[in-house]
Amino acid sequence: MSGNHYQVFQSHSNRDEPFVRTPSAKSGPIAIRVFASSPGDVDAEREVLQEVVAAIQRTEGARHGFSIELFLWETHVVPKIGPAPQAVVDEQTPEYDIYLGIMSARYGGGGTIQEFQDALAKWRKNGSPWITFYFRDNLPAPREPAKVKDYLKVCEFREQLESSGIVGTYDCVRGAERGFYEQVREHLSKIIHELLPGRGEVEQRYDPGKYLRALREDTAYIDIKGIGAGRSRADRFSIDELYITLTSLAGGDDGHDFKHEKSQEKTEGRRDSEESQPAPQQ
Image (cartoon, rainbow, N blue to C red; front, side, top):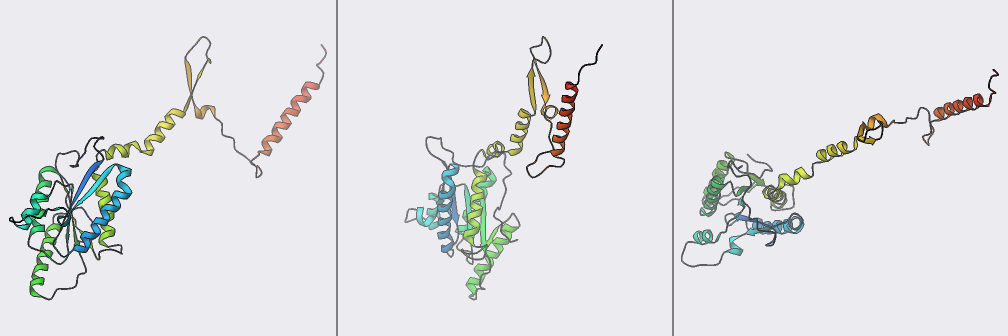
């Protein structure tokens, strides 16, 4: 399965909200961490990912009260001799809210697969992190037998994920509708807003239908006191009963109802004529 999709698995846990670090108001905004996982042939994509995170932080972080951090082993892991490289990365990888995997032509030594499996195990247990994976399309066919074998592993892994959820695909690093930068920029922003706590309350607070219903309830009636003798309570009347809409039958550009004015003049003239006539003698 291919296309401009980004979500791999949906939570079936009993948690009401996904896991995000939510410090108190005194300690700062909500912190959301993204963990990038990939073999070593997608350096350009990993560099672009740093631009994506910086852009989201700059344009949306302050406005919506969150900070976003990208964890990359090449910038965050402290060198250590002795354990295997993947073990060093694993022991220094912090908790994260979004797992973002990337694969192009290389399958690698299995480190990316291990990181994905660890993220999947956490999701099955806690409903977090949000797991998303991107595969590159339109690659030139490898010729060396070792590269062909490695790419076949990528295809098998992709098929496995497509049978379990939805993956993301891209054609180039950036500069096109199906570019990695363009898609991840949009998708990460949507994921972050899904993870932010209280998003349902915000949506409800800005429900225009609820506001219009309340406005109509407050303005649809008028309470008038003093209609009944000896009563102090107010009588409620509908606006529709008290307000008469005036319509123009044959008016000019200024909206005047000339027929209505003529009729009114005739009525007033008749009344004046009747008042000026002398009263009959008894």
